[in-house]
Image (tube, rainbow, N blue to C red; front, side):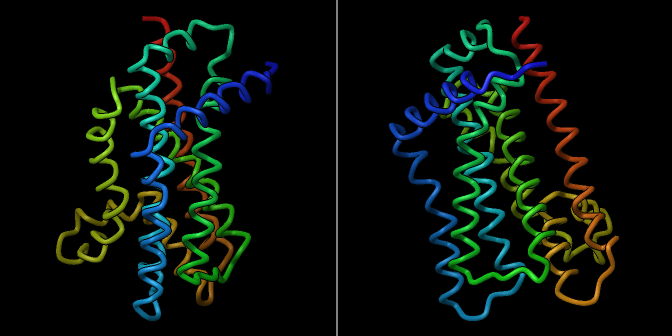
Length: 235
């Protein structure tokens, strides 16, 4: 199956223009950076503190911005036109996610830089961060497909925001409430687990397991997103 880079580029440029005109959504991307700078001024941050700003970058940029971009298309009824265009599903989804991907990488980089986070295993962490970016964008796309407007998208994204951002902290109470141990398998929790395990002695399996778990989440959410997209396209 041939993929047209021209179509992906055209969708990317359109999204960039729409994004730059939306002041409220544009301002959101600076919040994780400001939080990272604030945490750095508080003293020596822990791994959990570092990843509070990084996971917030994923939630606010990769998920929230992506959700709003999709919802805005639906609100203007332009997503329907895009679905009926010659562009393939994969081209539309890649094009719609490209801006969020670029923005997320930039924001995550500056969040890590300002909080002075230095991974013990740079290669493994970069791979995990890139995979996490894809996961959060997929979640944003999925939620956007269920939203009819930007206002509705802002509400739709809240449960995912709470789950993925605060889920890792819930794991600390798993001894008292065993059911909370399920949150350990969230991509955000696995990312923190990878960061912690690489700080000390570790094996290849210790690095591989979190990456495989995040990859499994990507496959599941991506397949679900593609199915919902195809269903809405045929309706």
